[in-house]
Amino acid sequence: MKEAMSWAAHLDVLDPERLIQCPYNKHHRIRACRFPYHLVKCKKSYPHVAKELATCPFNARHLVPQADLSDHISKCNDKGFIEQDIVNQSSGFQREQVNAVSTWQAPPCDEDWETEFLEQPNSPFVWGMTNSGINSSSTTLGQKNYLPSSVRAPESFPYAESWKG
Image 1 (tube, rainbow, N blue to C red):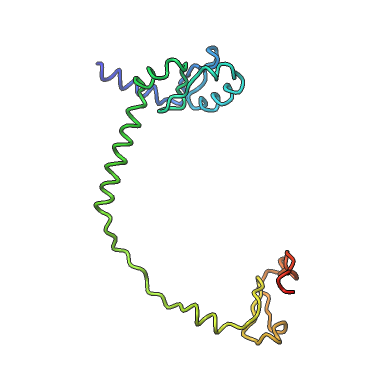
Image 2 (cartoon, rainbow, N blue to C red):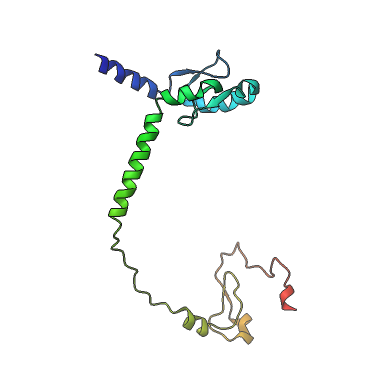
């Protein structure tokens, strides 16, 4: 019977509609799903109370008087979850290191950027325009605009060209 009661209590803790008492104002009872937002709001409304409360390092929803923090930390139910996460992460990390042998291989690369660079004409890049391989003296005749009719390429740079002299 005790196990059934603990299971019911565990389900109650997970219920987002359960009511929780606000640590800043004892008359406030807030649904669990809204509690973090309420804490932020009430902390601003009651700064004198906020100065006297300390936040649990295991669950930011636990606000206790500063004098009781060490006692709360030793008894906090959420401490077990954090400790278990740390154990799981460290053992998982060790397993990953053991199984870290990778079979991935880079695909073959047919690109030769140096050759492509030497084969390109010496014309400036203009977004949305191509030069179609025409020499630089007649680039304006060979430019084709592949932009939609509602978009045009800029006619000038958005900055001053002080380096051109």
